[in-house]
Structures are given as C-alpha cells and as structure tokens.
Length: 314
Image 1 (cartoon, helix red, strand yellow):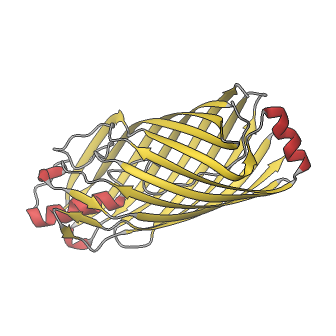
Image 2 (cartoon, one colour):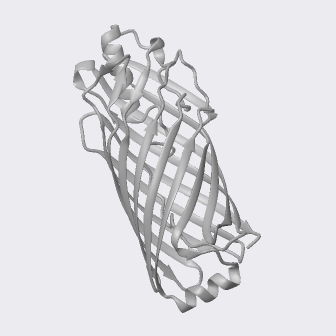
Image 3 (cartoon, helix red, strand yellow):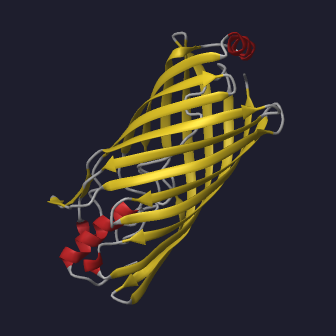
C-alpha cells in the first residue's frame, strides 16, 4: 500500500500502523495469551505442533489523517517444536516457532481505497524456559507419582524469548509480515495447582531493537512494552481441559527519526481455550481470543486457533 500524503503526516501514519498492529499481524507480537505456560513436564519430552490461526481486525487511526475503515483479515500456519530437559535438577524447556502468514489489509485514505495482500513467512522465535522452583526434573513415571503425592503444588519459572528478523520484509511498503528488527522478551511466572484446577500469573517485558530501514528511510524505535496475563484452567476426566485468560499491555511509545509520538500500546485481551487428548501421544486444541485497544489509535480484533500436537520421548 503506497500513499501520497505529506511527509509529516506520512510519518504519523507509519507510526499508527506500527501501534495498530498492521506490521505485527498475528500473535507473534507485543502481547499474547498462552495458557499452561509453566506446566511441569517430564524430562525428555518432545512436542511438535502444527496450527492454523485466523484474525479479523478493525483498525483505528487519528482522525487528523483522514484514514477510515481500516481492516485486516489474516490467516497463518504455525509450526512449533519444544524439548524438555534437565537443568541442574530443574525442569527446563526450549521452544521454537515458525509462522507463515497470508492476509489482506485495506482502508480509506482521504476517501481513496488502499489495499495490500501478502503471503510470506513471518519472524520466527526461540525461547528458553527454566522452572526453578516446584518442578524437579523427573521422568514420565516419576512425574505421575509426584503429582499424585502433591495434589496442591506451586511452580515458579522464568524464560527468555528472542524474535528473529527473518520474515518477509519490503522497505518500500508500509505493511509487512516481518518486522525487520529483533525483539527480546523476558518473562517470569507462577503456577498454582490445586487438584484439577490451575491458576497462572505471568509478567512480561518486550524489548525492541531499531528498524533502521522503515519506509522513506525512517528509523523506527520503540520503548519497552510491559504486559501481565492470568489464566484459570480446569482439567476434566478423559483428557479434556478448559481454560480462560485475560491480559493487559501498556507502554511501547514509538519514535520515528527521533520524533516522539504521543501514542502507545494500551491493549486488553481475553480468551477461551480447550484441549483434548486424542491418544496417548496426540492432542488437539481450539482457542478463541478477543482484543480491544483502550486508546483512539489501535485495533479491536477477534482471533481463533486450531492446532494438533504429537509428543514422544518422555
């Protein structure tokens, strides 16, 4: 989407795109909801998951730019792998995810329609997690005995995730799947299990490198985003579980060529997620998520996810 507007207004417009999520199309972004994040898993367990996700968003812009009716309709295939291992007697895990995104962004600028359709790989990410309290490194049989002996237990963990700027990116276009910058996300969380119920609380900080090749040779800089999310999950007999979560993120002020803007991230998310164990080694999950911006520049979105996973080695 190329727009003929004055440079100052164009810079503001670029900033609004960044905040509203046009450059961050799926949940590989500065806010997410991930239930069962700190689960105590058996050492040696490997998981490969494949998912299909969709998102519809209404995007809001500052009225002085005369940009209206902004929408995004997106789909993504997501492949994810994780491995659980022993870290000095504690349970640790490495994860990696690669998305492939297709979507259409459109809107009216001064009454004139603009549209961009993209099919491209997104930015992959890698993550290391260590449950440093309440989750000793155990085999599958040992873990089953541990859970039976400790129906009430608490786990505390920390992680560090890195997003790599390898997704599709064209510096001549306003809208891209890749972000052309690194993102680092430290997290800390606590999980409390009480019989079939589990309660999770996770705090995150998102740190961003500069994108020095933004449109019009603009350098985009973003300050940290701070996020907090909580989940309540219930396990049922027969391998079925159901959960609900809510998250809030704030911060992330953006500078463009050193010019401070007045906009920032201020988002609320909530979701419902359910999973079912198909066989001893296979499971399925379905989820729905809703997001709303709390300011006049941002996006309201609805998302869904369907995934299948296979495990081995535990």
